[in-house]
Image (cartoon, rainbow, N blue to C red; front, side, top):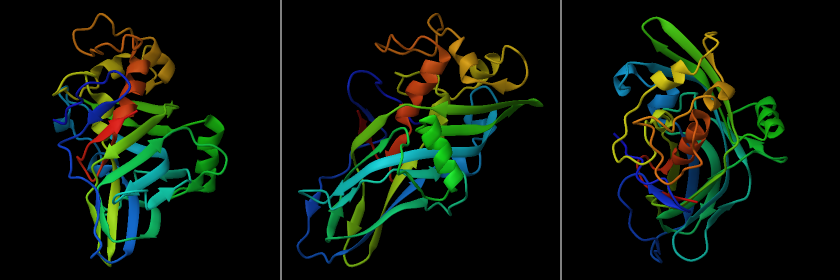
Length: 273
């Protein structure tokens, strides 16, 4: 289980152990860096029932993310400094490579510190692997994410289509790319199972969907954000929020978890602002 750690204060470290320090390498030749966005098999395929503590499975049909302010450095000023807002859908298969956002020529060296932002799309956003209609949809809704899919258990299917407007800056991400006359890749990795963690503060939270399913009070098998907002979590033994006392309902809890999804190169950590 990938732990959440502490979701409190101005910044929080998420992911695994820290990488090495960034540094220029005067002997390394210049080359190319690709920055790609990847949702892992949990988005491209599904989150299987065995990943859930309560037996559900989740299959995403769309997972749109607006990624911006991408930077990476091998010491000194960032050699990767992309100012565009990229709208990407993480669902289409990518052969474990992720979807291309940025490709740029850079000096040689190890690009060990990367940063990026997930924030509401605005005018001028560009399409990565989506249509212009998708870009317009994200801009028009002021969305940073659009998460659509189905959850299934024991013959019951629940649908959801959640419009997310949270803003998250991921900094000091411990990337691994090394350029020496070739093409290196920085992979912005989004861990979708975190959407269903049952704690904001536990080191080893469980992945659960029962509480989300129970939010469907009109029993039309569609779980809306408005229904999630009606679920009070303050008296629950799980779904603990630590000092984030403003998170009192399941919608606010889900939105808080959307700010923990981003990593770099798989499990490498970032600091969240």
